[in-house]
Length: 512
Ligand code: FAD
Ligand code: DLZ
Ligand code: SF4
Image (cartoon, rainbow, N blue to C red; front, side):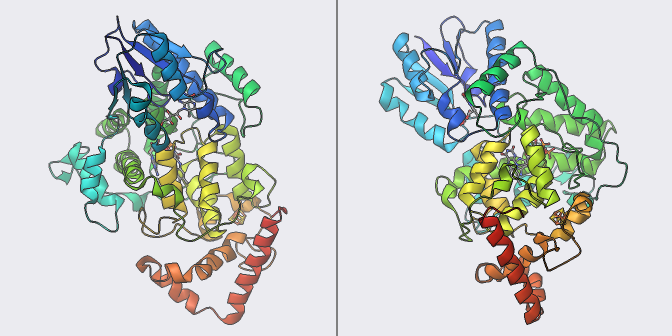
């Protein structure tokens, strides 16, 4: 009996369920770089290089451990270009009795896997991905008949289930959530430690040459490349975060500083999402730092909430709502994605900085993604389909299960408020409070109207006016709509006129 075990590019962990009962003498492990995956959206060059390098290093590790590994390189002569083609080719070349795979993290790939049974005439066993802390059934039963979900209650359930900073049924100390302490603006002269950096080795160099050669027209800078590409390196990156940045993670979680892409964030999502790190080991490392007095509770709780709360919650929603979730467009937004998202010059300094850093690093931190880029996409009425594609392309941690709910649900309110209770729309005042971007901007954040005014200021109100029929009944927007009611006619006309002028220029590809 020979079993074929397929390992995908985001399943790079020895504890993956598809390997659990592997017979090293008989079974074949298949890993493949395929054209379909690299191009179904035109991923950032750094993202492709990262995945391919991490895959090749993982294959080396498996080889060292005595597994029988078949690895298809992208430019391998017989590479068929798809997962399906590579599995078929391997089945045909060897006497394969069954195929075992851990379920794909994305709907698109899992759907294809489910047809393989019929297609190849060999039994296919699809195993649960137990790296996630909440199973599909568990999430579904938590949702039950609820019409409106709240991440906070899901998070509490996960804290209890995994006994994380808990004393029985209650938090070990204080309250469940310290989010309101985690909104400090950046102060002058903050000392910001560097992110984890490592020079590319020969394997990574070879992959970088391949990516430069085969994907020259994809967005993003390939160099400098300094991501971890092995588990040991990813563990070093985790330890560096715990040692050097976790203590300030909470306080400055929402802060943005010109020229500082990394701040006190973890920079671990790439590693967790592709399997190099397990979510629970990151959580435990943070919890230990708290118990060892190395980091305060607001930081530790905040970090843990992101991983066992938000990360699991968005994944639950993804599987609950796919495939319809891909087509959600509650606000009927249909503006094309402007070229400034691809690095075309803009006078809006905040957007320019966030796009520049995204292009350089295939990374932007949460508040840049949410309150600058996402906020703009929301209030300018950009099409969910195009915005989703952009976020899938540009970030090295992007897989549809996590990207789609964050974009469709969190930033665009395109699911009508299923994931979050209100749209994260904000005027320039928020960006000015949480960053120093406005100091270097041609627009004036204090001006509400006119050509010099910060576009976020009038677009924010215009967004509320344009979507009044869909949003004014939202409880959490009641006060804002009350304020809008008090605006006199001149103010409303100025908002509408400025927005019309700005959006027209945007649509015509003019520099805004
Ligand atoms: P930190 O800020 O240090 O947070 C720690 C960890 O918590 C992250 O590594 C991540 O695993 C988890 N986390 C935090 N927030 C979220 C969240 N909202 N959803 C899921 N996990 C979360 N995250 C992705 O992993 N892939 C994506 O494609 C992605 N797209 C996003 C798109 C938008 C519009 C927004 C608003 C957020 C998106 N996020 C995505 C969530 C979040 O921004 C990133 O996880 C985070 O910026 C990664 O950087 P970090 O490791 O430094 O995270
Ligand atoms: C992101 C990515 C890319 C760019 N290329 C590959 C690849 O060639 N082979 C592979 O196994 N995985 C790749 N990945 C990650 C996959 O997109 C990810 O494993 C699936 O989408 C999960 O459903
Ligand atoms: Fe952004 Fe407005 Fe500030 Fe300029 S003034 S950086 S556009 S928020």
